[in-house]
Length: 136
Image 1 (cartoon, rainbow, N blue to C red):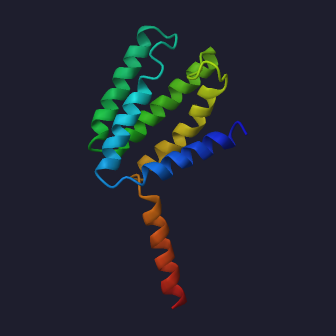
Image 2 (spheres, rainbow, N blue to C red):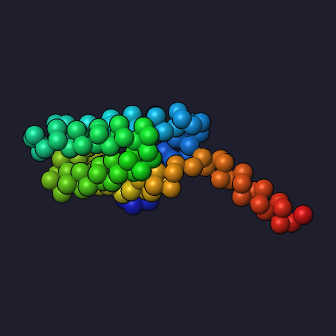
Image 3 (cartoon, rainbow, N blue to C red):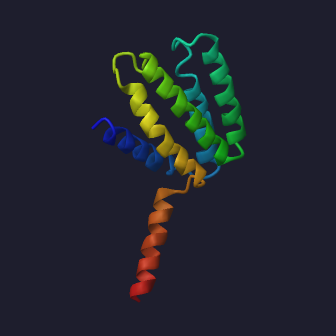
């Protein structure tokens, strides 16, 4: 469950985020990942927490124009999650494996952004239409 639950959470996040129409989807996710970058500000790495937040904020800003930068921000967050997990300072203080879970879900989310953050319902509709054309 340690691996499966974070993947399910990532897929639910992707599904819900894909419900936004463009450009709201991109803008929302750029803002969301900027917030995620600040989640560890008091996480125990001192000034490096501020440097990390600044780096993710830069990627989020660039993400307003490029989904690739949002993907990069999520991968940076993956590395930060892993460091915090190993350091023993989880993102949710009362859930010991919360940073590990984030480190598993974040790359799944990043992959979706590297694919251009397509609408899940749009992908399903296209696949259904293709199947209908083949049977006709």
